[in-house]
Length: 66
Image (tube, rainbow, N blue to C red):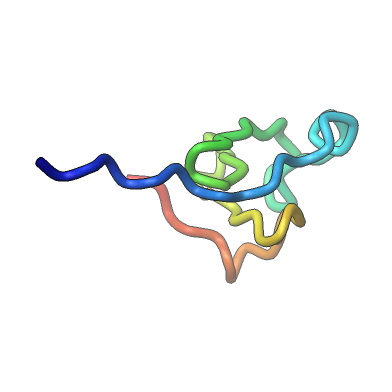
């Protein structure tokens, strides 16, 4: 029997930081997806990565949402 894949080891982002971060394109609030290690901008249709606990708020680094 195979074991489930381990959960991502992304360090959590400071909740105070999450309160002030907005999408750099739309200035809309972001949703934190801890499991994926991303900040989601629904208005822009982008997911900004979080690397080593640091949000990468560059549109060129963001993943387009399906």
